[in-house]
Length: 190
Length: 190
DNA sequence: GCTAAAAGCTATTGATCGTAGCCAAGCGTG
DNA sequence: CACGCTTGGCTACGATCAATAGCTTTTAGC
Image (tube, rainbow over all chains, first blue to last red; front, top):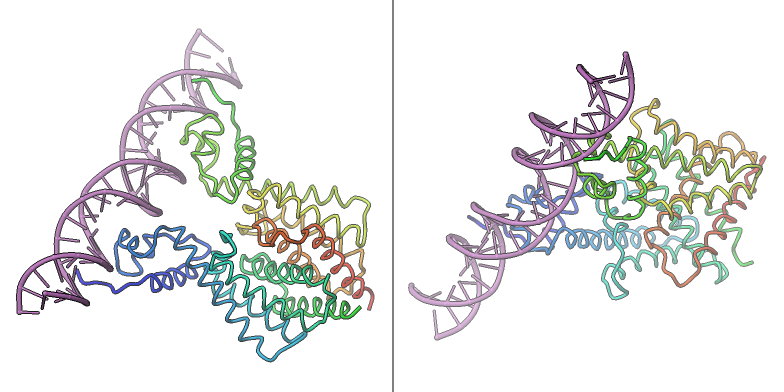
C-alpha cells in the first residue's frame, strides 16, 4: 500500500475545494477520503474530527478572504475601496460557498483563536474602507456593522438563489454599493 | 399502545419549536420522536422524510413571518414602517432560528409552491415599506434587494454571534435603520 | 358490531462518524 | 547496511441516524 503523501494542510485544502464543489450539501469524511484516494479512517491521522476539519476550512477561508480584500483595496479609497471590498466578498461567497459557510458557521473560542485573528483581519479591511469617509468616531462601529450586514446579506441571499432572476443582480449590487456610498458620504465630518 | 393523536400540522409545529430550541444544531427525526413520545419510524406516517419536514417548517416559518410583518406594519408608513418591519425580522430570527434557517435554506420548486407564495407575501411587506418613500419605479427592485440584504444580513450576523459584544447591538440596529431611511428619503421623487 | 384505514410498533438496511488495533513504508542511527 | 521506530495507511467494529418493510392495535364509519 503506497503512501498518498498527505499532510494536514493538503487535506484541508482538498476538503475546502470539495466543500465548495458540493455546497450546499454538507462535507463528509467518506467523500473527502474518496477524493483523496484513501479510505475514511486514514483521514483521522491528519485531522481530529469532522468538526476539526471544518474549523481548518474556516481558518483557510477567512485567511484567503482577508488576503483578497487587502490586495483588491491596494491604492483605493472612498467609494472605490468600498466597491472593491464589497465585490471581493460577493465573489468569494459565489466561488467558495463551502469555505464561506464554514467561516460564518463557527464562533472562535477566544481572542487567541487563530480564526478570531483571521476574522479580525477582514474586519480591519472594512475599517480601512470607512477611514476614507472620515466619520465621527461614534459612528464607526455602527458603520462597520452596517457594511458587514449589507455585504454578507446580499452575498448570501444571492448565493442561495434568494433573488428572483428577472432583474440583473449585478445592477442591483452596483446600486446597493452606490446607495451605501452616498449615505456614508452624507455622514462625513459632521 | 395508546395513540398520541398526532397530525401533520402538530408534528410540524413541534418540529419547528424543537428546531428553534436546538439551533444551530440540526433537527433529527429521533429527537423529534422522543419529544413527541413516539418511536422514530412512527413519524413517517405523518411526514415523508426529514427533507419534507424541513420544507413544512420553512412554510410555517415563512407564513408566521409574513403575518407578523403585516400586523406590525398596520397603520405605519415611511420610517416607522421600515423600523417596524426590520425589527420584526430581527426578532423572528432571534426567537425562531430553526424556522428561519429552514426558510432560507430551501428554494421553492416553482411559482406554484406554497412556500414561494408565502415568501412572496413577506416580499410584499417590504414593497409596502418602500411605497411610503415614493421611489421612481426603476429604483424599486434594487431598493427591495437592499432592504432584504441589510435586514437579513444584520439579523443572521447577530444570531450567529458575529458581532463583538462591546458595543450595544440595539443601538447599531437603530443606527442602521436610520441610515437606510435617510438614504431612501434622499431617493424620493427625483 | 364489523370492517378497514390509520397509527403505532419492532426489525432491518445502508450511510456516516469515530475508535481500536494491525501492518507496511520509510526515515534515522549505529 | 541493518535494525528499529515513527508514520500513515488499512480492516474491523460500535454507535447513531434516516428510511423501509411488515406486523398489530386502535379507532372511526357504516
